[in-house]
Length: 163
Image 1: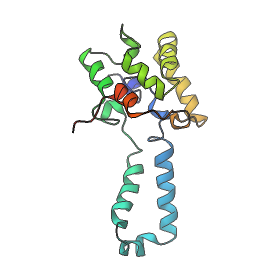
Image 2: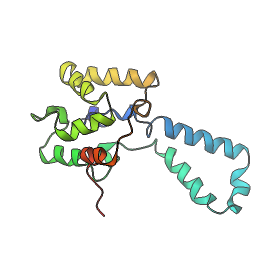
Image 3: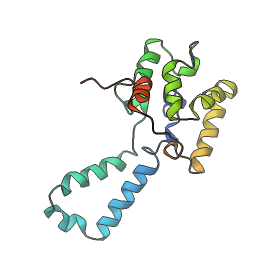
């Protein structure tokens, strides 16, 4: 894996546009800082559930959020990542079957996914990364455009967790 791909998911999403790496860690840190100013660390420990909540907040921002798909983030049961690994591909857009049914299902959740992958194929990784980083600087986050889908569509995209 090249360093450039560190924060590009196998399916072609850019981790810098994921709220788990951008918005959520910032908001968790801000909430924890505000609560610290208000004295919560001193007296909150007396409230049932406070200690795990506090550790949870720390965990959301301590390491900068999700480590990315290639470092174990995302759904551990992701069949898209597993398929790419089996085919020895860095990106799904390198596959002759792109877009497969799993990518099409994921595209129903992330409406820019297939178009962004086509753009990556056209302009190459370096320019595509520059474009994604510009989106991130402008505050674009996938959560703002992601669609909610039923469980069947999500399972078609990701697979299902083992019981």
